[in-house]
Length: 245
Image: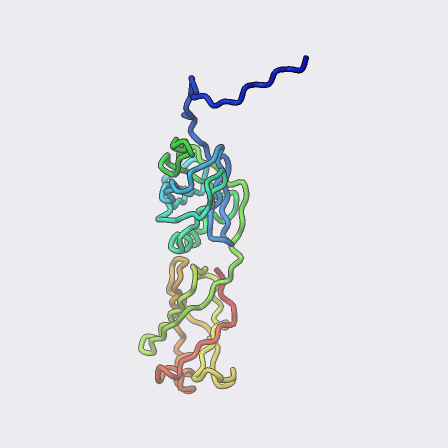
């Protein structure tokens, strides 16, 4: 005879074991092209529970107060759906701070993460397992910043001879090449009616979004001959792309 099929019905569960397993951060990596950090967990995460300030980065696996560069996110958000993969967007202020720390997050070798349990919860509401500073997790990949910095605005003090350059992101103060900066008295001036700096002194001691340069007296005198710095309408700067992030 043919086998009997189960009678269709719905029954309330008699025994239920709740999910008390805490999720773990399995792997991660920074993506500086997308200004974000990718987090992959052992089980689906409630994306609305993300608290980005619970994420810290350090330059060594075991934290040493004397030798380890480190930074804790000041904010951040995610547009990821619930799931194992969560992408956290890093605020610009933190991105610039990271770029100002050359020994932190410059390659896989100095990219380690620590998290506190308040970072997130799984779908069942369990907090993530902490990753302590004494045993941080190294990045599984590393995507460099390939976005070129832009000169956003600049200022000139003809009395002190100080030129301030403000960029879209932190730049390397030691990468300044003075001949890459041209000053002219009108927007359409040719190079023959303006000057390129022949030297100067970078006043910054750290990487920053603003670079301050003390212009040589000889260059200041040439600027005055060309009428540069006489009025606000006679100051134009040409960037020859010799500055690097």
